[in-house]
Length: 338
Image (cartoon, rainbow, N blue to C red):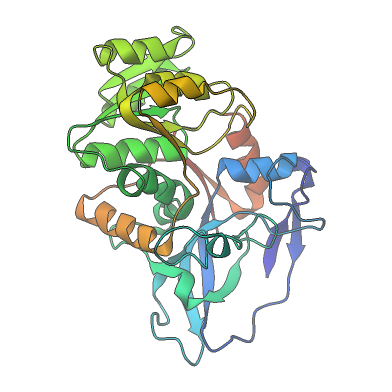
């Protein structure tokens, strides 16, 4: 079986194609899956750069998100059968309910082996069937980016229909959030440095677009668009360069969902603007298997299809990482395994 291996901090050049033993034995509750597609997240770049918090002192198989086909099941498996199309929840131990430390201790591709390989054996409890309207490439984007957007909009906040949502940039989480929020009847604003990407966002339903190069104080533009009120929800992915602006753009009683830190995780945040605006800043740590199941149903009912920017072959994994690192993508970057 072929797989890729990465060492934390060894950069993209450190990605190495290796050979692993084929999976021949399954525990009674395990499912063997032939992986058909793997989608990349910004987290995967952070691991090559050595800045992701969860680290290993040895080489690991990277990536967390895949979609594939069940090719064997253990003797006690009841949830799946051979031929089923499945994807894995980001946290195999967070099946449902509120987040607790023990539920998020394990995840794929951080400090232990991930999914950038041809086959994998996993407990049936952590798998979810792929929505019938999605192919493997599209489905591979749901476990992390999709669930993160779902958690931000539907689980961690209680938005009323017609609420206003601000998404930063046009990466995987932001574009999925745009699709989900519009399907739920919300008004969506989006930022980017590219007018071409903003035009793409408008075709997907964005109600207002802001070029943050042309308008560096883009939080003021958000306030103008909302008659000074601010938005009900911000999906904050930028980190130290954007977090205070995002908080300013958040309206009274609104929520800033902190998802990532493209510009780094340091920076300052004015607590007074939280206090006097009765705002909340809430960390979003992907989500549970139950959230992935809810997201899958919602995408199927509303015929939502994730936006795929580029698809690379398994032999082009380093090029896929380089493409994502360049920041030119709109939506998701996916690796297809034949």
